Image 1: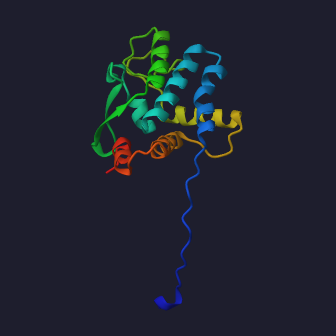
Image 2: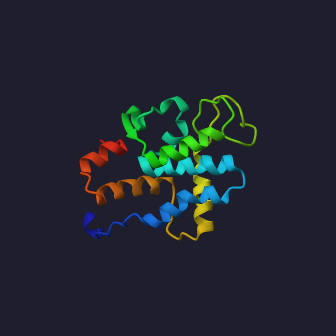
Image 3: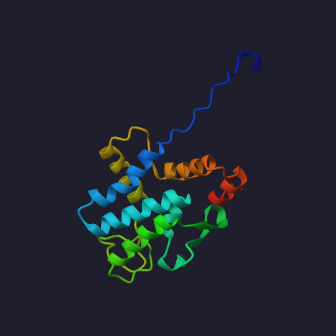
Length: 178
């Protein structure tokens, strides 16, 4: 009978997010760590953009160069074909421009591979797995113990906005939630 089963309430685990200082260390790390300046610039630009925009990693890897406009606005088609604008901070734009200046190819993808079979192929782009692997690797090298992923950057973005006084409704819109 249903009387035999007693349900107990379990406290919901709070998502662990690295603190702001750790997220900043992680964003800045590729610039000094990567031996290839192009890879360092690309990964730094990608992490800066992830953090400053609240993009999902899948949205980041789908971006094309022509998606960026001079006002620092990007039109995104997110999950469930939902559309929204994201705004790029001047800081992130600085790193994106520095990366693009180093590129010598015509690939329309904003973040393209520099090695392997996909290097230089038109339309090829870095994968979500690559970005997740790099974030995990950088985190390990930096000794950041709190699990940190691309989603943590999204979470950090929302937390930062909330701490700066943004309304929950505005944050939802910026993250592309209903």
